[in-house]
Amino acid sequence: MKLVNNILNWIDDFVNIWFNEYKIIFRDAGVITLFFVAILVYPLIYSFAYDSEVARDIPIAVVDQDNSDLSRKLIMMIDATGEVKIDVVTPNFRYAKELFSESEVKGIIHIPKDFNNNILGFKPATVSVYADAAYMIIYKQIVTAATYSVGTMSAQIEVIRKTAKGEQIEESMIERDPLPIETYSLYNPHGGYATYVMPAVFIMILQQTLFLGIGLLGGTFKEKGYDNLLINIGRKRGGASAVVFGKSLAYFSIYLMNAAYVIVIVSRMFSLPMRGSFFDVFIFISPFLFASIFMGLTIAAFFKKREHALMVLLFSSIPIVFLSGFSWPTSAMPEWLLALAALFPSTPGIKGYLALTLRGAPFSDVIGDLQHIWILLVFYFITASILMRRVLRSSFKVVIEKKG
Image 1 (cartoon, rainbow, N blue to C red):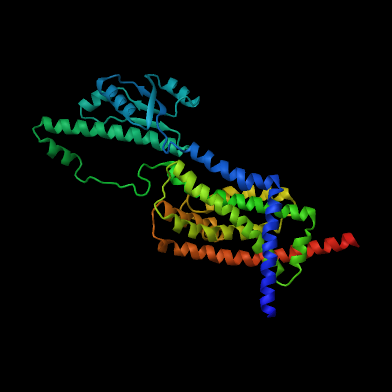
Image 2 (image 1 turned 120 degrees about the vertical axis):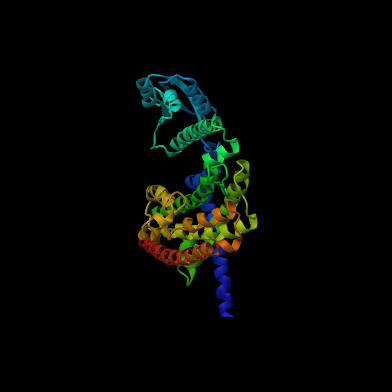
């Protein structure tokens, strides 16, 4: 009977904490901004920015120092590609270089003098491409357009030469390309940047806004120094776990709706892939949210002021993105960084979410990631409860000192 009463009291305590946490959240303008405004706005800003999926019509200059029929044909072929748009054709390389330096064009294609004569004389004719490799997307598009156009013209010239010698067109084409390759772009057939980056960004937004909001609330509690309800419950046996669980349910109920907004509404607005079932996705996302919440409560225990949460957690956002493994393969990371990455729910969260939504993988394929999340969930629940107990005891001492 005593055990039953203890359980009922514990449930009553965490329910009180749960609803009390809503009051705390809605009294804090900073937390409201993070939990509601940021979640509403950030996914839309990123999605609108990358909505075109691929960079097209990148302005370039062509330096045509040959001015022949063949050079003009090559220029037309390059301009016909979707990747680039030729803004300037000039024989003056220095002028093109000035345009590039002033960022009026993003690349230069150089057709040398005697381009036509070298081709007709069966000599090699080199077309040079200058592009800013510091900007990989632009560089890739310019090089792709030039390579495709030059390769197509080269094949046409070779086939014409062979047919002029009496060979059949089919034989000439086979001889020109005896080992053709077929490529299949799986999961992201158009190579779209939004399709690649946005699903992972959604998971990061959910985790980082949780961290920031919970960190602000933790810093506020430390600055205030006390909360009678929390202290009274925290002094009880098992009270710290009731506080952690009650707070977590408040955050989870809000963020389950936030996750639904991001995963269902924003993804559909921008036609992002959802090849798995929504049920599987939310079964996967729910423990991810709890793991993020418990980790947030663990981290928040170390903040003495609200500003500390902003300084530390805003700084950590970019490293966590790179550690997650979607922008750089984990196989190329050192072991100690992989161990650090494994501490964040976003690492298995992004991997599993991409598998379900982008690849349409069956739920059995993400069991390993789900197990990883559950391990983090249990670990951070324990650490959050231990640290919460210490925080509440310290707050109780502050109250006693003030009364004394």
